[in-house]
Length: 245
Image (cartoon, rainbow, N blue to C red; front, side, top):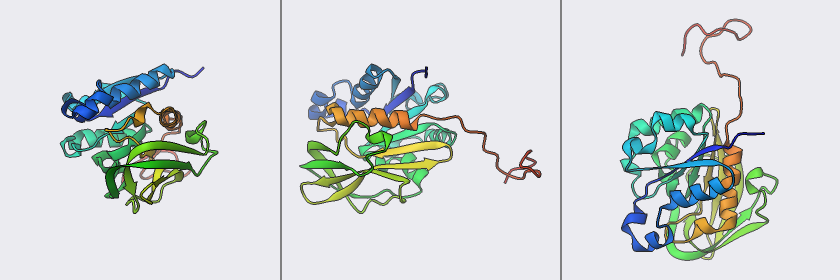
């Protein structure tokens, strides 16, 4: 029997303490809501926030983390570059990464994708329908044909990202825009999922199907055993590294 997946949910945890409408929705923080759902699903989820020493992402925390979930918005610039580099190296070594909503503009997502990750946006309470365009994918398991959200912040194309390995969800908004809302990438040994929904002023993270996707994403992104990757000069037969390049 597999051991429980060890997850760390990272969140700025600023809006929930400074904006009353957000505080009412997520009084203990978005990270606490997500971690609670994951723990109830049999995973071992802990949380980390921007204001903690090393943003809560100490070596000890990262060493026990199999999948890191990242929610950020207005304070991306406050995340220390050294912490970003530590997380990047962990992803390349196999740690899964799930980037939610406005985490598209986080340092870690942009550094791993090598792009500015810009997009169009509008905060006007649009209705959103997320269409499942890869129904056989494990991330979409149990979701059905689509997910309806009564109100969400609109994100629209063009989304300045590299072509994803897989496109799982495409959103349509009541203003007419469309958006690639569920994209997967691989960097080194690590799997990355970008999942768009989750604006802080809407109860998106109480939606059962949204939570199902995140839980599915954690299972999908969990590291698998891969033989060590050897770079640099090797002898005939591929054995033995003599010097790196």
